[in-house]
Length: 442
Ligand code: HEC
Ligand code: HEC
Image (cartoon, rainbow, N blue to C red; front, top):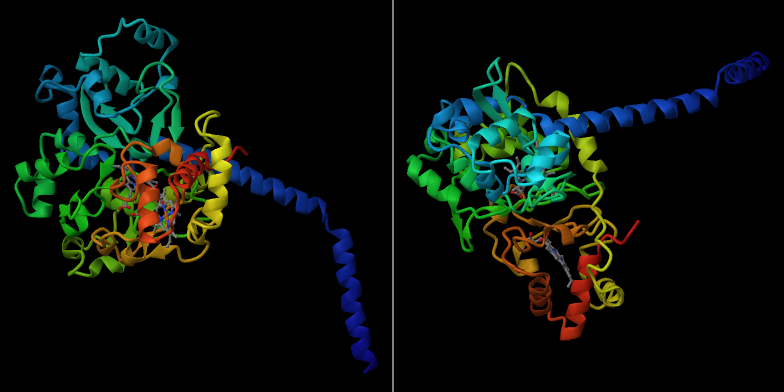
């Protein structure tokens, strides 16, 4: 008994000595610094991946579709007339002002650069100045041998500081000017997509051109569906900011940011990596994906998986930007907020400050009063409560997953009818002002 008590206090004594002898709290402080340094590294690497990593997808966009040949045109060894900067800007491609030399920026400002010459596009690609597109040139830097795309192609834009389409990068913003379908349709060889979908190349081009500006159809290569009750089956490009704390992602809640990043990099961008999602084996819902075993992707040289942690971290670090002063009526927004959280019951689903449900944030089509076409193309067959912060940055293209509501007022009118809210016209205007004001300055 005595021996046992002695043993217990001896252990306690030794424990105390260990504690005194350790460098806590100095070690604790050191580990905080370790965390900070790790965070900084992830942020830097994630930003780089988001902006510049093609994950090897040039083997698809260049190697298979030969998009680079259409860009450089016959004059430079490609095909056709080539892609002039004016046409590229018209298709919604953006130019990173910070990648241009001072002299070049100055000449563009003075109108002394030929925007109708594909050679200028090639010069911009050499500078890595086309947002979301990387050109791979031969050793002499002359001929374009392939192009690859990045996340920033669709999920970034620029602030138009120099001219429309030319400015400083705004990562995470949805590029609602981008005509993705027409850009892909511009590629000379769409055989690989035609084979996948079991149609001819002309049909592929027609489907792609039918998507519309600011849209893309991520499910096309899974189920081959091209049309729904609202027309084209494409969905709007959503922002990639303001996602921290949000559970499920994409319009129809496929999974978390990390799931979708792996999905997109492998199956949409056609990078070289690893992807596992046995839900895609459902041949009724995803005939193409099941046949092609898209839920079981393995590459010998995995160029995606090592990038995923940093890419995830960077996206979560992108805050939804606050609206510029004067872009909404503050008094009306304050009244709108009271309605949003009270009588109009919007906050039942859009819980501030996430503006989606903390938890399982999905709803049936019926609950929100729309058709279930797009929801049924996803494993959960639901629509995800859209996080609303930064709505003011993507008013072009409309609202809801397919842009069916042209304005925020149309969205509010829809809810008023569907939930029988009985809001007056002035109350609806107040709600709209509030929607434009999220997130308030912080
Ligand atoms: C060709 C355009 C395009 C490219 C390139 C692209 N995305 Fe997307 N992204 C979309 C579209 C369209 C959706 C909506 C898809 C859906 O709901 O079916 C989306 C959805 C997302 C979402 C969900 C956002 C939300 O509302 O929760 C995230 C996160 C995302 N993309 C990240 C990425 C990352 C990371 C990359 C690069 C690895 C990338 N995307 C590349 C078009 C693109
Ligand atoms: C039952 C849950 C629920 C309620 C209540 C609700 N919403 Fe929504 N909201 C959703 C879902 C789900 C979506 C996504 C719909 C889609 O993408 O098709 C959405 C989308 C939106 C959008 C479009 C976002 C975008 O990026 O296009 C706006 C704006 C919006 N809601 C505002 C409101 C307002 C205002 C109210 C109150 C009048 C409200 N919501 C009430 C679930 C809800």
